[in-house]
Structures are given as C-alpha cells and as structure tokens.
Length: 265
Ligand code: ASP
Image (tube, rainbow, N blue to C red; front, side):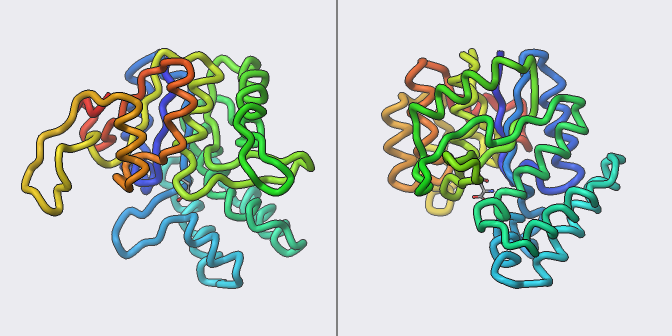
C-alpha cells in the first residue's frame, strides 16, 4: 500500500488537481492521500496558507480571496458547493478562534475537496498528530494516535499540517509540515512506500539556478536526505525522514507535472 502526499504546487487549480486524481487512480495501491492547502497557480497568486495568515491578521481582501478561490475550484471540478464550510470558518473567526485553527483550514478544505473528488473518506489532521499543550509536536504520542485512528480506514484523504493538543485545540507543524503528516501516516499504516509529490523530479546533483541542466539523483540514503533538507534543499521538510526511517519505508520524491519520471528514492 502506498501513502501519497501532494503539496500545494500540485493542488493549485483544476488542471493540476485533475492530474493528481489521475495519478491516484492509476495505481490501486495508492489508498491514502495526504494534502497541503491550495498553492498558487501563477506567480501573481498567493498560497492559501499565506492568505489565511493575512486574513487572521484582519486583511478582509485576503479572506475574500480564500473564499473565492475555493468556491471557484469546487464549481470547476463540478463538486458540491463548499460555502457552508467557509461560513463555518468565518463564524469561528468572529468568535475568536485560535490562529492555528484558522490557518489549518487550508489543508482542511483541500482534504474535503479531494475526498469528494476521489470518493474517499475525509480524515482530519487531528486524528493523526499529537501536540503538547504548549504546541510542541509529540512524536511518540503521534505514532500511537495515528496508528490507532488509521486502523478504522481502508482508504482516505488526510488533511496535512496540523494535529491537536491535550485540550483538543488544533496545532500546526511549522511551514511545509504536511510532508511530516504524510510520513506519519506511512509509518502508522506500515506503508510499502511513501510518495511525496511536488513540482520537481526529486533531487538534482546541483542547484539548477547555478548549473545548467544538472543530472537527477536516483537514490539517496535517509542520512543524506536529512542533511540536504537540513541545509535548505527545500524539496522536503527535514522532519519527514524520522518516521519513515523508523520502519525502513522507502520515500520517493516525484513530480506531478512529470509523473513518468522516477524521481529520487
Ligand atoms: N500549507 C502549509 C505551508 O504552506 C503546509 C504545507 O504545505 O506543508 O507551509
């Protein structure tokens, strides 16, 4: 069984989301899908997570854009309207919800949309990750929680990037943290493979902004991957490696725009 995670750049508009659906449907083993919030379809747009942060700080235009882009996406994908969900988020905001709850709604909404599109159950991020009451990620508790909760599902779409603390309050990983949610799901489900789908075909031998057309790297050790992520390779969140390494689950970085490319394992 494969756990596949799609980042915001793979979930930015109707076309990219249809490619994601095609990728998932092309292999029956892809039974668990982890999603980020909607990314930007063009350099002019902002990531939904960034808009939510602005909206929480009082930017009305950002709040309207979050609503507009999700409603438009649902129409374009011929999915039922998501207006009720958006109204509930606005309602929570008016009642003074926490920052983490509000900012996590990008992943929540995307998981709802992809679950509707694929006809798979929605799985909330709070079922996956455990945090301390101060907001620190608790790795051991997360492994127990995710393993227990994911037993109930045969397949599903998981909202990445957040979990909950002891009071049942939503808590966020740091930016890029949906990669970690995916790795935790792979760990909990004893997956045969964790696929991390993004907008590059894995790691390259050099920075393409400096060196022309560098060759791709087919294989890396977990240690090398951790080091590259740690020093800022920006392909993967460095916290992703520990959960998969614990169970020796291969991690494959793939490109949604070039799905035939084997990427880096
Ligand atoms: N949406 C969040 C971010 O932009 C988390 C993620 O994409 O992994 O950082």
